[in-house]
Structure formats: C-alpha cells, structure tokens
Image 1 (tube, rainbow, N blue to C red):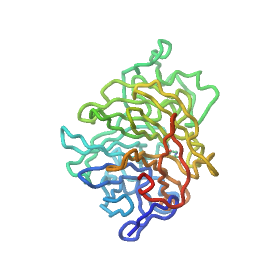
Image 2 (image 1 turned 30 degrees about the horizontal axis):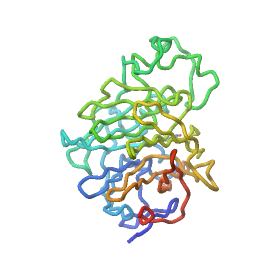
Image 3 (image 1 turned 90 degrees about the vertical axis):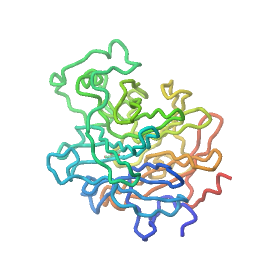
Length: 354
Ligand code: DGJ
C-alpha cells in the first residue's frame, strides 16, 4: 500500500505495474477517482496510439487499480481512430443531466503527422467504459470567436496559403490570418483539457492556430459538441498542456511553452471569468529545475475532495524514446495572494493540505 506520492518515480498500480495513463486527467465519481490517460507501449512506437485510452481507479489517490482500456483504437483502417493514429490528452467528464460519461481527446489521423489537429469524442454509460467513439472534427467551423477583431474576421481559402507551420514559434505568424484560414473547416485543436464549472457548463481548452493561440470553447448541454461560443486567449504565446481549476471564484491556469517532448518553463495565469480577461502570472515553479518545470509538462489540476483548498497539479515526464516509461509528477499547489507556486517534492502526502 502506498501512502505517499513520489513525483517522477515509477508508480506501480495495485498489480505492481507502472501506471500507463499519460497526458491524463482525473474524474471523481461516487467516491472514487478515475484516471484516464494515453496507453503507451515500449520504444518510440509508443508515441502513437496502438492500444487506446487506459483507465485506473482509486479511492485514496495513491493506490490505483487497473480498469483496463476504456477506449480501444479501431482495427478498421477507415476509422478516424484506427491503430497507429495519435490520441493525446484524453479527458472524461460526467454529464449529470444525461448520465453519460463523455471523453474528449486530441486526435491526429494516421499517417498525417500533427496536421489534422482534431478533437475526438467518445461516450459510455459506465465510467470505466468501454467508450464508443462518436466522431472527430475541428471545432467551431463557421463561427468567429467572441473576441475576434474585424481584421481577423476575414475568411480565407486555405488552398491560397502555401506556407507550412511546424507548431512552434515563428516570427512571421502575423502574416497569415490563421483564424480566417480555418474558419470554414474548423479551428485546429491539439493539446487540450476539459473543465466543468459549478453551474454544470463545460469548456474545452485547446491549442489552436498552429499552437500559437489557445481557444476556450463552451460545450453544448450534453457536452458532445462546441456550442458556438469561444474566445482566443494568450494570442501568439504558443501555450501547450493546458490545465485549469477554480478556487474561491477565480480560475487558475497552468500551461507550458511549445517545445515538443522536451520540458520547458511552465506558464500560469488567472482570471475572474472563464471568458477572461486572463492575466499571465509567469512561471509558477520555484527552486532548482524551475526553468524546465522539474522535467515535467502539465496535464491536469485535481481539486482534492474532502480537503479544504487542496489542489494537485499533475505533470508528465515524457520519455519519447521509450514512451511507456513516461513518469508522473503530482505536486501540491501553494496559493499566494496573486497566484500560486509549485515546489518540487520527492515525496509528499495529502496531509500537506491539513
Ligand atoms: C507536446 C504536447 O504537449 C504533447 O501532448 C505532444 O503533443 C508532444 N508535444 C508531441 O511532440
């Protein structure tokens, strides 16, 4: 029985096997936490989706029981989630009205690198699955964000743009109106998370516009589609790995810079409304290793049930050469008057919040 977290170490499940749920997210449902994440295999091949989305269950957050594969990749070569596609950062939320568990993930179609930049949706009546894949798409086709400027609200034929982007910072990003380019076909959706607010409204936060700008989209009441209201945030800041929580009426954000699998300095931000304005607060990490987020990249923020003011920031330590060996780093968030801090701890337990 584990009684502590050991950030960055191998994390055995209750069978003694290192947990295989990368880029994950947690759902608390009826007294149990469920951890969904990317199932990886050995070697570089593990960076592709060859199995699916793995689920684990725990009541104490330290000890995790394997619940198997919640969403399987498909053997049908015509399927959007055919084996060998890319499925990243799956997140599951529960719709209290429909009773359905809804999974969203970043999907890249097989053989297309990271060009597709789509959102995938799968549903299940049971929290652990099996989840049924519904569809994939690029969000918000034919809709302008609420905070777009008149200059941005110009639809452009994508075929007229020859230039290629590689998903990382480029000086001349201003020369192409990416929002206009993707207006008709839908906006790009790569690194992502989901967030359900106190009023039951859900939001999809995703890296868009060739990773340069984050979009926050409200979802429909059944959580199965964008409702058609969204904003652009952190324009041209190239933020990946979005994670968000709400504390005392304020929204706190963690993200990363955009450097592939290599760690970089984390970003943080705060807002009084999910619709902004969002104020960047800089790198929340403190101490040695702060410039590389102690080797990690954010994936989720978990409010701990039954503890006051207890939030855990979850990170992946990627191992792209041997994907299955990727590690997890969970750290307690220390809130300040302005924002929050993250300190690396080699071992800690939930008593830290008492
Ligand atoms: C960084 C992202 O955060 C990951 O989810 C993954 O997409 C890698 N880039 C791929 O290089």
